Image (cartoon, rainbow, N blue to C red; front, side, top):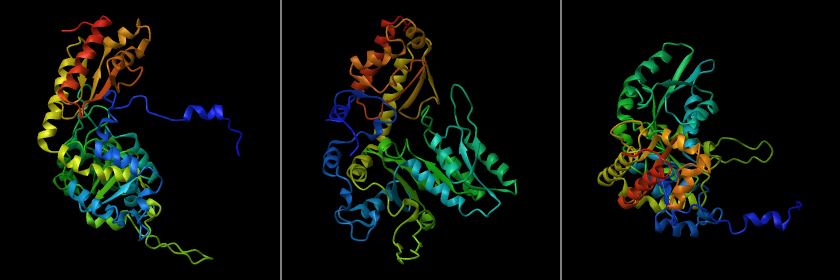
Length: 408
């Protein structure tokens, strides 16, 4: 046994989260869509043990388990996002990696696979392309302060790649709502272009599927990737890959390997997920438990109320002179980023420098603003009540006044 002392292990004993959502108003952009409803918290405890999803795995594959009803859940989830089939993955980024890898595998040797992406794509989109051996071509945005993706330029970028005989466009990917500014780009605009150009269309719904109305069919998508821990009220890590039926066998091929000595074969296993999806317990169980919650909260009426809350908070924060909301106006998502030069200036003379904002807000029961960031701040109001939103807004105003910022 390694020479590890009891003293060294103390810091891990009884580990509990400091910024618990039960005790604080959480506005962390990565987290608010993943907060579990009460029924899923009970599920989390029940399925917390490793491989707990596999108690009644009769066929040797996660997606075919019927107790609990994993197979039925996947069929319902595909309907939920307006696609034909769905499979759990380790994360949305894992889903993107599978799609790019498999599409690129069909490109003839000597030809470079090309993935067309938006100018606000997450770094994991680039990593997925790199893993699959694909080059990326970016569709630009219009720059500061709106950063709006110029969706109509997908046609131009696709044509540019097609003009090169040594390149093949394997797909176009759109980040439905981006992680920086919360801009929502209409996927149907890109879907229509892709359909006309004969290019498969991937919608990265990591910040939209599960928090707002969405239809892969309306978007004319061939693939939809989603994130359970970001936007579908699930413990992490878990993502989903939904696709049209025609792509299912390509995305999830069966094993053909055979042991040279033993003769072992595994022809029921899926190679792209190393046998079966690696969410053997709590992540998948909580996502299944939360599906009814997701169906309800993504209704148009609820999303309209969520947007009203976000816009109200933005108007409040912009009362601080020099503070500006970045991204589209009117803003179409609850994730927002603000330029905050007055707070950056105030930090120069604050006792904790750039940490003053985080500390002041936490003292008022609010967490999620990244510690030390005052040049610009990101937050997400999804799931908050109007009273909570008003408290966040007034708290930021009070802190700004306390540190000498001018407020209208």
